Image 1: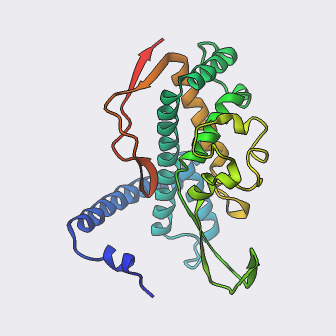
Image 2 (image 1 turned 45 degrees about the horizontal axis):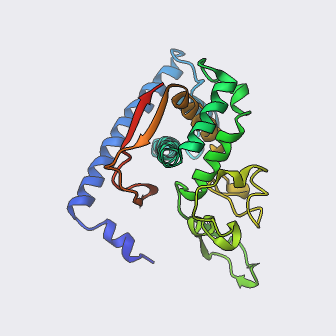
Length: 276
């Protein structure tokens, strides 16, 4: 059954035509990259130690000349789109909100900078010590609580089951309102809408009244496979910025969280950087 939202996507409006044109362009670019990489691997002219190479090599091994096995080029294109947009855009918006929030709370910005300088000084942050950044980790968790990239998650019951005293048949679509749960005062306390990284001082499971109340990356067997990499990437980028710059919001900044696939500043993030 088609919903009104689905039907509207097929209407020949200006925005829909533009989106379809962008989609065709992205697919054409990715098809060229995939084809070039595939030919290089077959001719032993390129290594398969990057993400696309590993995906193509695995696909070739599974297919092994059998048409009904392995992934089609269209499947691989969709995988590339998923890894690129889901992996890059979400981490980028996490860093954006972190810079905004730390500009609003300079005391936490200074604490984070002191921690980074204590562990790294002015040298490049390394993997081993990134895991020791407790204050930076608390800050990133609190930003993910207040401004999760995805504001809801969708799940479908694969069999009849009971949840919260209600019995659901198989095939029911459930929407998990992540952003509402992350802002619920009954779960997080009276300061649920305030920026307070200290709530994560004793870890995620002790931050709220319910140990599963914090789930910006989802949970269970469907949890985001890029969770650890995204946090590592964010810590690296934030540490590098804190080593070199202090920052504050420009007077032109307007705080307006807005959802376009992911939660982002509607009017951009105008931030002033000062070299230190």
